[in-house]
Image (cartoon, rainbow, N blue to C red; front, side, top):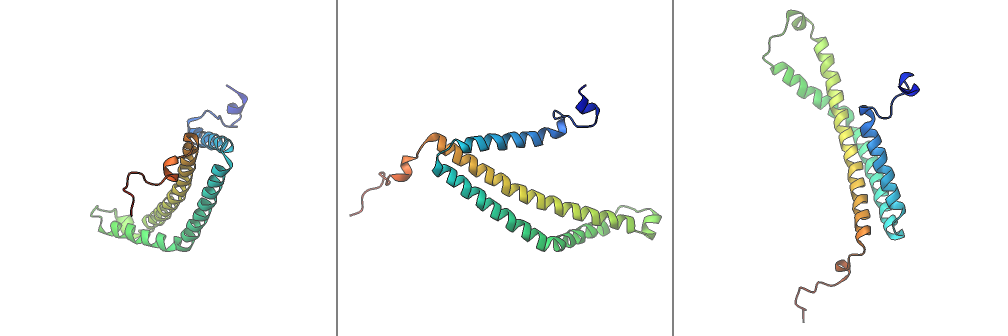
Length: 157
């Protein structure tokens, strides 16, 4: 065993680190591909990144402004389910439901945080997909069909 793994330093080959290292490798590969593109394509990528950053900031502001409301809404839904649940509860929980309420509070907070993270990651993945599309179109070369008029149509007189 290496000294890194024995000392608790972490092993870069551990299964838990695989998604992070894959994302890092994808980002490096994408950056290398973008660096080899034409200046016009690099400008498109810059604009995509800029717009993505703006969308991400707007999403963060929106989430920050409505976080408490969404947590309360989620708590109401969970409490409604809790009250309507026909399962018998032990006498000590019926006497003091505060442990269950604490669990509901924590669960509502966690559910809203998970949704917020999902939406932010979706914006990031969408930007990466758009950049990859620019890379692919750059590799294919110019699309002359976009620059040419539609020859399939009859000319209008």
